[in-house]
Amino acid sequence: MALLAAAAFGQTVSEKPSADVRRVGARMQCQCGCKDSVSTCNMLECSFSKPAKERIARMQAAGYSDTQIVQAFIRDYGQKIYLAPPSAFGWIVPYASIGFGLFVIWAFVKKYRRPKPLAELGPMEIDDPALEKYKEQIEEDLKKIE
Image (cartoon, rainbow, N blue to C red; front, side, top):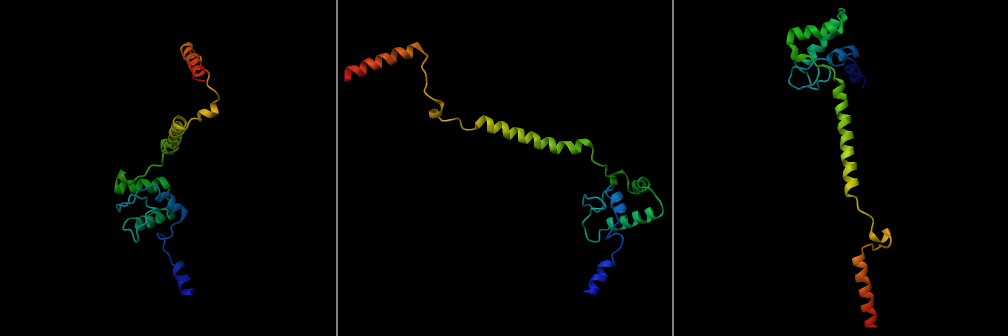
């Protein structure tokens, strides 16, 4: 158990990056082909993420700012490495989509819900004079039958 605990503490900077390294790494795309950021790349022994995290840690120790580190990576690897933070549009679209979907469901349920049975509506009143004439004729025919 002690040997396992000692091995767990023997992690390098890239395996257990600090919050500062993760913050800067989140602004750059890993170049191994995984489409994750440098700080979230899940590949074991990634050929790009591990050295990039170590480089970020060394540059931070040397006193470089986050912007200077990102600019150095852009200079070395091109603009494709930069991951811009999500804009307001990126935050609004998912919630607007959920709201629109709920509205569509509400409108569908409102349109197609089952109407009340006729028994609950009460007696129907006839207000058409032609129907009233036929009703009287039916009443007379029923009296003749009795």
